[in-house]
Length: 320
Image (cartoon, rainbow, N blue to C red):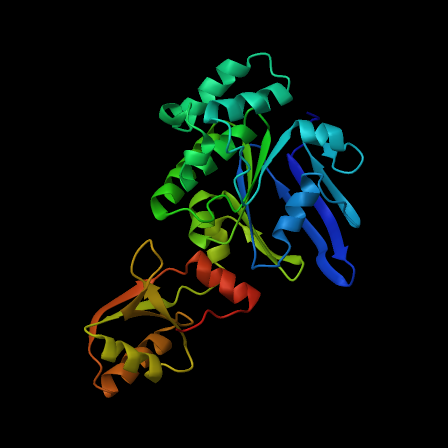
C-alpha cells in the first residue's frame, strides 16, 4: 500500500449512462480503519459509485484512488486490497459453508486455506453449520457467509452494498455488531444503505448523495447540527386526539413516530418539527389546548439522521 492520508480518495467523479447523468462531480475521502456510509435515495448513484471504486465500471471524469492506487490505471493493484459484497448473497448453494470459504481461499492462492476458513467460520458464528450445504442456510446465515467469503483474503477495504437488506431486526443487529468488529480490527468499511438508523449506529463519517452530488457530509452528530433543535414528540391518549392534532398543526412538518424496531407507525404519537423557538413551542401547545386536545406526554427531541436526510434531499415521507 502506498503511503497516503486517506485510504479512499474521490475527486470530481463523473458518470453518465447515455443521457442520464448519474454522478456529477462527486468528492469524498475515507480514513483507514473507519466506517464510511454513503446515503441516498433509490437511483441516487450509490451503487454506481461503488462499482467504479471496485473497478467494475469505468468513470467518465475525475479520479478515484484506493490504497494509493488509481482505480483506472492501477486496477489490478486496487483489486488486491479490496473486497465487494453486493446487495444479494453470492454463495454457491451446492457447497457447504466450509467449502465456499475454501474455494475462495484457493482462488486467492492463500497458503493456509483450511486455517483461514476455520477462523472465519468461528468469527461469523457458522461453526455448527460449516458442513451443511449453503442452500439450507437462513437469510442471515447466507449474508454472514457472504461477508466471510469477502474477507478470506484479508482485504484492507471492504465494500458493503446494502448488507442488511432483507434481514429481520435480530439478524440486522447481529450484522451491525460484526461490521463494528471488522472496523475495530483495522478493516476499512465502505457502506451503502437505505436504513438511516443503520448509518447512524455504524458510521464514523456519512456522505449524503443526492441528484449526483454530495449534498452534505460529516459525523452523525455534525450532520444533525444542520437542523434546529426543535423537534417535539407528542403522545396522546387515543387515536382520535392524535388525528385531530395532526389536522390542527398544519404548517408544521408532522410525522408519525415508530413503535418499535419493525418500523410500524404509532397511531397515538406524532413528531412535530419546529424552529426551536419558544414562540413555536407555545404556538403548538396553544393550538391543541384551544381545541380541547389532551396531551398524554410532551417530549422535546433532538433531530434524527432521518430528519436531516429528508430535509437535505427536499423530500417528505408519506403521512399515511
